[in-house]
Image (cartoon, rainbow, N blue to C red):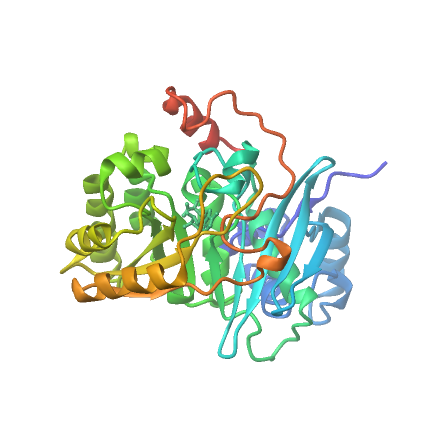
Amino acid sequence: MSVERVNLLGLTRPQLEAWVLERGGKAFRARQLFHWLYKRGESQFDAMTDLAKDFRAQLNAEAEVRLPEIVTRQDASDGTIKWMLKADQAQGFEMVYIPETDRGTLCISSQVGCAMDCSFCSTAQQGFNRNLSPAEIVGQVFLAHKELGFKAGDNRIISNIVMMGMGEPLANFRNVIPAIRILLDDLGLDFSRRRLTLSTSGLVPQMYKLAEETNVALAVSLHAPDDELRSQLVPVNRRHPIAELLAACWHYIDEQNGRSVTFEYVMLEGVNDSPAQARALARLLKGHPAKVNLIPFNPFPGTSYRRSSMQVIEAFRDQVLKGGVMATIRRTRGDDIDAACGQLVGRVIDRTTVRLGAKRIGVVAEAAGAQP
Ligand code: SAH
């Protein structure tokens, strides 16, 4: 009969230390183990040669390093890679690697599906199934290193991590925070806080909590310069309108001594892309630590939105710049394999009876905040 082994992946360094101490081990053993796991990407205890033999035997008996399983891998013509990972028999979530000349970005998921119900996002159409565990969140980075052939001492293949995959990270606060701690730990994956970005659709109370817990870079899905339109595009705006959202953003930057918040703005033809809307956006953000990142809309089956033309997107950017706010256009990557923003669908069986687009939004926020 096999005993249930503890998955060490996803334990923060203090949690791993506590686990080792409980078994009569020494704290420095936990640090060695942590180093092997994350700095060297080793998942076999027997390969951890400087660990005492009896400690390795104990690890083999009681613990394991369980990575998410790969269901499919697709390579796009521009070098972007998308993996679907297994959440359980019927469900999957996705991660995407985006190579560029000067960096490599890994886009990771925080939930299977999403309950936020943004009208222009294909993940939303899938509904919400469950939160990913810390092991499943950190496991994506661990697995991507393995898949990309990362060796200890290599220059970083993954220089940046963005929590911009499937799901709303702040609706899975209690699992996302330990994952962030492991990613930032200098004995662990050792990412700098400026190269780890959390993107939120605007769960305001959790943004204040985030400021107490960590200092990673913050991106916010704004998408409209006024409440009427934003409430149509991003339903959580009905509960936390723009003024409240922006106050939470400036608070975060103050608390964290951050540089600026990146405001994502998806360019939807005839919906939010007029010069007047660009000027209104600049007025909202001017004088604050803000930059705007314009995302050309990525279509998906069943959507009636269309992408603004490049000419319109460039004109919009120029208006925002003229209004005194930094603005850039996000290059669309991996769209031939549906790996671009808003195209991640995985496999999701919807378990929510109400999503945020519906009236009883409070119910879903609680469901989304619950543990898997
Ligand atoms: N839930 C978080 C994380 C998802 S990030 C958030 O909302 O920020 C993914 C980014 O891609 C968000 O800014 C999202 O609004 C944007 N996006 C969603 N669907 C898109 C689409 N079809 N085309 C382009 N961008 C999209």
